[in-house]
Image 1 (cartoon, one colour):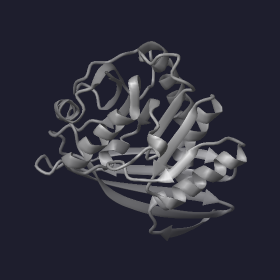
Image 2 (image 1 turned 90 degrees about the vertical axis):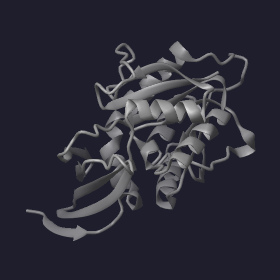
Image 3 (image 1 turned 90 degrees about the horizontal axis):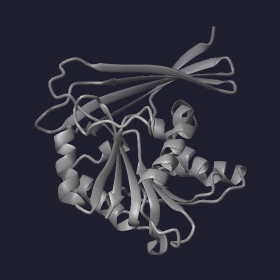
Length: 269
């Protein structure tokens, strides 16, 4: 049996393990964005090569995927370890992308580049803990898009009546590395709109096993709260499609609270 140790370390400081647990849906996410691009975009074909921007690009899994499909990719993140991992994988794949350190609420695109597509999936948007920061990010995204371009926003909505913890567990394998992810979310505080979250990763590698734990707060949203933020921050971003985290372009959903995993397709007017 593998020897087990415990390590208190932020999962954003270990991009390899973070990448392993989230990589399973990468191709599906990219397939969806390209299908939605064909259906909803209104950018003139004369506007040059297709460019995509990923705020909070993390380990670069979608940076690599979109670049391999012929998109010109830009991305930024606050994590130096994440960016180093992303740059290394791009170099290894002989692909290019512009990657830099930046803040979701304050970012600036190099040379005032404008994009055909931007995306912020899997609730990354909820790391912006104030209304000011959340609105600032959306304004920056709107400014970065070409008219007719698309922004994909994925958010796990909150049921404020919930009184019990939510728990999700899954396992992913890459080579000789196995990672078990246990994520637990506590009921949100309706007043502060903060939800405590804890993730434990159990990593098995080379006959050794260790666990690392990360704790943080998410900012919470109901459908109505998200609508209001969008309306106040970026009225030029119109909702043209609503889906869930199955990434099925043939299965649109309503923009409401009937399900938790909301994926909006927003178009720059």
